[in-house]
Image 1 (cartoon, rainbow, N blue to C red):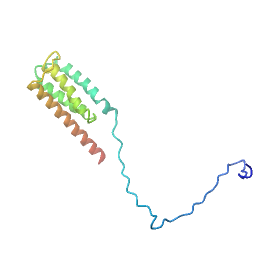
Image 2 (image 1 turned 60 degrees about the vertical axis):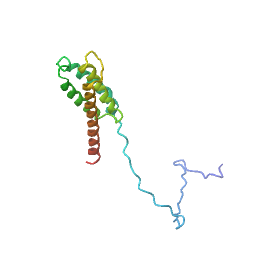
Image 3 (image 1 turned 90 degrees about the vertical axis):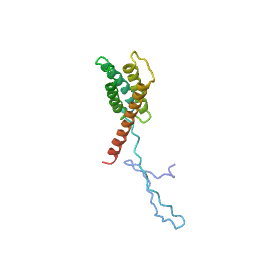
Image 4 (image 1 turned 30 degrees about the vertical axis):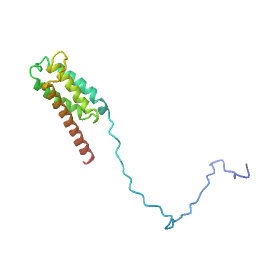
Length: 155
């Protein structure tokens, strides 16, 4: 062993030094130029995106609970407008897959408690109109989310 490795001093270890000889590739062995690397932004994974559906459901339940004693059942258009605004606000931070579910949960509360009392669900003309309005509110929330992403990317 002693003959293969030269002794080192006690103060510092022996670090072999290598010298690189610069080589120049010839015309036949030249590597093709690399394309510019595209950098993608990481996906927007926030806690708000994951909790938008449960928080929207709780907010819809609280809104219906407040509207019914205040006479929201007598004026379903007011309750539908309030739920549409709530659906829009809950759909903005939600993931795109969950936006129709946010609208569906809001419609279940609207249809079950405002239009048809005692949590009865129906699918008559006012019920379909309410579902369409809430789906359009979720679609508007998707548009607002896209506009916010565009503003954040290009200041």
